[in-house]
Amino acid sequence: MKYVYVGCRTTKKRNARGQGIALYYVRNDGSWELAEITKTLENPSYLTFDRSQKYLYTVHGDLNNVSAFKIGPDGKLLHINTIKVQGKNPVFITPNRTNTFLFVASLQGGSIASLPINADGSLGNAVQVEHLEGITQNGVSHAHQCLLDHSGNFLFVPTQGRNIGYERVWIFRVNDENGKLTRISITNARTYSEPRHIALSGDNTRAYLVNEKGNSVTYYNFDEKRGTLEPMQIIPSLPESYTGEGQASAILVHPNEKFLYVSNRIHESIVCYRINKQTGFLSTMHYTPVLGKTPRFITFDETGNKLIVTNEDSDNIIIFEVNDKTGELVYTGNHITTGSPTCIIFK
Image 1 (spheres, rainbow, N blue to C red):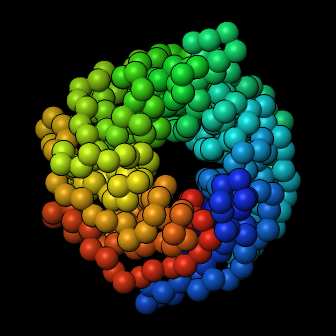
Image 2: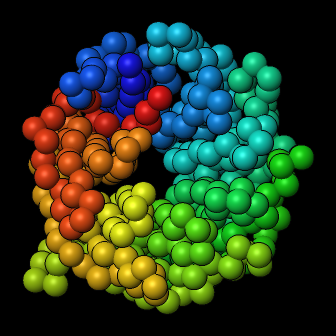
């Protein structure tokens, strides 16, 4: 049996209806059965496993907390500990390649924290907090992600300016022995584009950045020896005939590396791009309605045959079949109702 964990928003401030981390059992026929909702601190909004998948970690959006849980034999969660990080509104977490540290990106805090992962799965206090300075004296650059390259040597941190910080991608070298991060390079983005998340090709040579307010994707060549990015292309995420507002959100490279997908909030769609195998350049293929509101997060199942969307403001998860020849998404009819979903991970 497959386990699925769903993070969510829970507070009135976020106009949310979530109750905690939801555990679903996925049956052989593809149906989802709600097994348990683990009550936590507010807004368990982004989730990750450690590399052994024995433990689950969550940030608590709008607070400054990160929690650790042990995963039982039935998939249910047992709380281990919760710690505070220096930086309000942690939004993304990822373990290092040796499974000894957890990196945390804090948005309003404008920082990256490195937390020790202890032998029992608990988290220790930060060994380093890297503050990302802004353009004003008290400004910060708002970290929206902290993603390792495939070698595990480098950490990508896209940041948003929001009038007080820098819009760029920062790259850090990772020291797995002590959890420390060293600044290696920065690559500035277009003003007001607001970089959000980045995704990498399987060979670690191409990076695709989604720009939230720019409603676009920037393609870069990545030099994995030097830890630097070279911008190559910017392409819109919204249709050229659409004149309304948009907020691009999540980005995925399909496992077959023929296609790249981006979710568009407000426009409520997923755009599919074809990736040129030789050059890495993108061309727009088609748009698919997400059958809900605010597609904050998208992911593939373990086969890549299905793409799953969390529609935060319509309280539903929608599952699409992926056509591996055309990239088209076809609604499977599988619709899961759950409160304010923001993240999904599979075990």
